[in-house]
Amino acid sequence: MAGADPTRTSWPEVVGIPATPAVMKISHDRSDVAVEVLPDGIKVSKGFNPKRVRVFINAKESQGLVVKTPVVG
Image 1 (cartoon, one colour):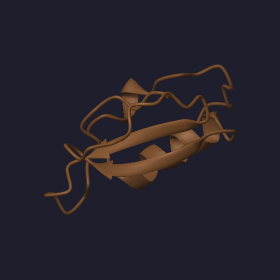
Image 2: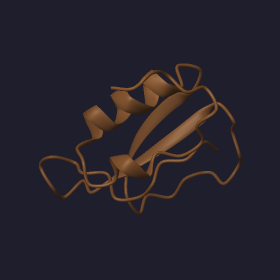
Image 3: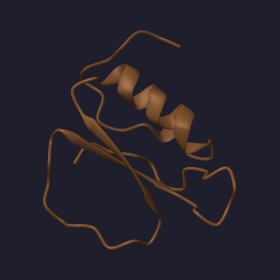
């Protein structure tokens, strides 16, 4: 895994992988943000939070694969 990058705001490379390694990658790059894993399609608040990254997964699959690019906000 490459070094941490505190300027990153999105992680397109984690789409299609299981939630756990995706969260580990995001947390490695940005230890200053809280990572939330949520099922795709759930209603979430629309407020922007610069200290949050939401990871949307396909909860119908046993592996919980990431289905959207996680972004800060």
